[in-house]
Amino acid sequence: MSHALNLLRLPIMTMALLTLALLASPSDSIAQSGERWYQVEVTLFLHETGNFDEENWLQEEAYFAVPGNARALSSMLDVLTLTDWDQLADAPLALANSEGAEAPVQQRNADEAFRLPDLSRDAFLQLPVEQHDFRQTNQALERASGYRVLYHAAWRQPMTQASRATPIIINGGRQFGETAHELQGSLRLFFNRNETRVVLESALWFNQFAGENITRRIPVQSSRDMRSNEFHYLDHPVVGILVQVFPYEVPPAVSLANPQF
Image (cartoon, rainbow, N blue to C red; front, top):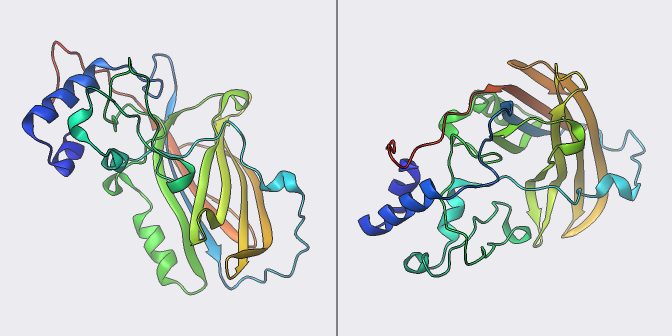
């Protein structure tokens, strides 16, 4: 929280009001007791020297759709989209999503208080770079000929069975037009049946363009049962996936009677 407040350089009175709102407002994204949480980090990269024509890529429409219950990761910087900090008490706003036009700022109901993101306790919130483990790996990919990083993010989330898992919307690589990206689709993480492994399931596709028109879509469909605390690589002729998950212990909620700053 202090990082965000320093970043925004809010007046003291506004800072105090936001602090009270943060402490007093419950959120569906905050950890609940009994949940098993994991920290996730993912890098998606392109094999630029691969032969994209060596396979006959299936073009079934089911491969190129984002599930209706998918969501994009949130960002601490989303609070910068608020247009009028002086009117928070009268018209509190929800956090915007970090994926641009497809996830606009949303208006909260009048009886809902504004709250800042909580890096330690909110699910599906992008972690700052100092909490990333893949920095050197990504730099090595970018320096090497034939590879290009399309997407990278780290976040925390409660892990559930597949039927209740929330897919993460992915938009990565170069952007063409208002909403089209080279890499699109979703990732889903969930427990296997015995809850002994975390499963990563990709439902992605890579777009090739001529101007702003998509000329071909290459599906990137894969699934992997993963041990935690291990580095995993999912191979594909076009898009490689690097992923790591490890258990995360959610800290207790801050009490209004004894706030920690």
